[in-house]
Amino acid sequence: MSHHISLATPHMSKEGYELEYVHDAFEKNWVAPLGENVNEFEKAVLSYTGACSAVALSAGTAALHLSLILAGVQKGDTVFCQDLTFSASANPIVYLGAEPIFIDSERESWNMDPRALEKAIDLYGVPKAVIPVHLYGNPAKMDEICRICDHYGIALIEDAAEALGSRYKDKPCGTLGKYGVLSFNGNKIITTSGGGMLLCEDEKDAKHALKLATQAREPFPYYQHEEIGYNYRMSNICAGIGRGQMKVLDRRVRKKQEIYRQYSKELAGLPLTMQPLREHTLSNCWLSSALLDKNSSRTPTEVIATLAQNDIEARHLWNPMHRQPVFKEARFVAVEEHSVATDLFERGICLPSDTKMTEDDVDKVCKIIKGLF
Ligand SMILES: *Cc1c(COP(=O)(O)O)cnc(C)c1O
Image (cartoon, rainbow, N blue to C red):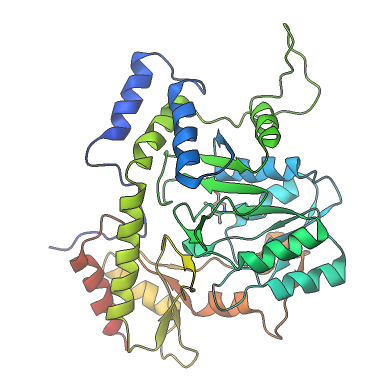
């Protein structure tokens, strides 16, 4: 009998940790954005990542928005953002009336090309912030990107929404920049049903973020507001799910990496390559992704459609931001004549990487793909 195979879905612990913490919140009537689960979830992420301070929020997008505010981004400023990413990396720049300038990818990790970042500074001056992404969990070239940001004094916002559990030279992703953004959306490596977290190098920033996320109330005996606030705090119910999920994060990372290894082995010999993993980095392999060769007889659309006919979900890579109608006015900087991000998009496929998949499931996906060549 065949069953549906998904790209990535929520995967609760078999021990039921998440439900215990949610139940506890009900018992204590802490069903608001206040309570033990929120604090303990933040502590668990802090101890896992070694970050200095953390604020649990309603979404990764909210964490990006607040990090841009903390970086001082205002109307008319420019922010350099990775081109090959999900739109949530770029949207908050526009919320603030700032201008996103998109930076092309390199081929070794598929992330922000440090050479294109340098070129963008030469062309358009020093931006208020830079947002690299660790695509599908694969760490960007952070040494080079950090060096450039340090040199010019630019705030580095690490979009680690897909990369909890990944490491760059033994440093956890999310802790490499001034600000780190995590997401616990339903399809991410762990989930809170929906949520995010902002990691800060500086505890003062975290305090400010917490205030902004809770309607920016000043410490007065009555309601006093001196800056614009947001309702971005994570609920104690969601944080209960997160607390339970933190206990199985390492298990999920190991499983994702096994899935990646199995694809690499079984698809070897076909006209495709897997997203390259670099030395001294550790990807959580959130989504195993493959790139069809330039002379491949098949397109990603054909492969995805064939898998869909077999009730298997696969997807295109993110469609680069500079190609999006909504960003058609935005500037884009590349060092190669043809955009690398576009080339990756045109040939890339995200393969099903659900941690509930068995070896046989991965094998089935591989057999169907092999049948196409
Ligand atoms: C998921 C994701 C986000 C947004 O996170 P939400 O929690 O869904 O708001 C931002 N950036 C990237 C790269 C993502 O994959």
